[in-house]
Amino acid sequence: AQSVSQHNHHVILSEAASLELGCNYSYGGTVNLFWYVQYPGQHLQLLLKYFSGDPLVKGIKGFEAEFIKSKFSFNLRKPSVQWSDTAEYFCAVNVGAAGNKLTFGGGTRVLVKP
Amino acid sequence: EPEVTQTPSHQVTQMGQEVILRCVPISNHLYFYWYRQILGQKVEFLVSFYNNEISEKSEIFDDQFSVERPDGSNFTLKIRSTKLEDSAMYFCASSTRPNAEAFFGQGTRLTVV
Image (cartoon, rainbow over all chains, first blue to last red; front, side):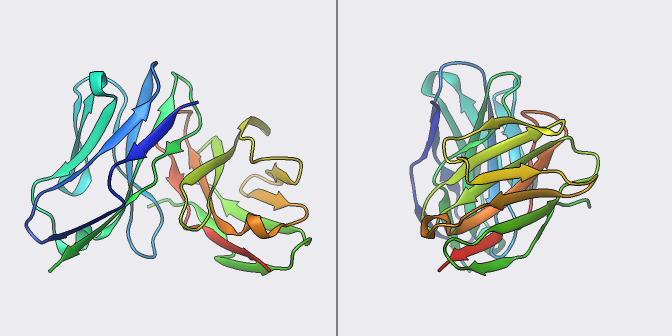
């Protein structure tokens, strides 16, 4: 069965700092990759997704992620964070061409100090 | 913007009681899901539903669980006889097709006492 691991449980940084959140998955076949964000008191929202094509994916709010197939990784980045980026971030994988379930990582809580 | 809505937002129930969690998926979506997150643990897949039947379920989704689409808009999760370990946040989600972006509701926090 596939699994997803996120390297950091908690990240604290100051505004304007750069953010990188690690995500690794274990599955050898076709994967679809997602980063979701959950702001305090809100529902899970999609930040970005990778299905195929350019491995560098740009999402909303200045986030991007890079799919590195050889490393089974899909790390999330943002060059300069804002206080409003305080949230929990989840990496998720959907396997196969018609996969219809997401396997989530454990989440990373990000706190951006003003 | 269309959204997935879940009711209630909080539910407290006694062990052994039946609960029904309700969801209204986005209207043109055809695939429906339930996930749960026990406090401090990962978000876990429970079940996916398409064309009025379960398309996939996890080992968590045992005989105590059932799902139903009783009408054209609602999608429900029933837990027949709740256990303490069923306490969790339950998320409903929907999508237009498999492996497309899933849109999530805000969740129902279920507490079994």
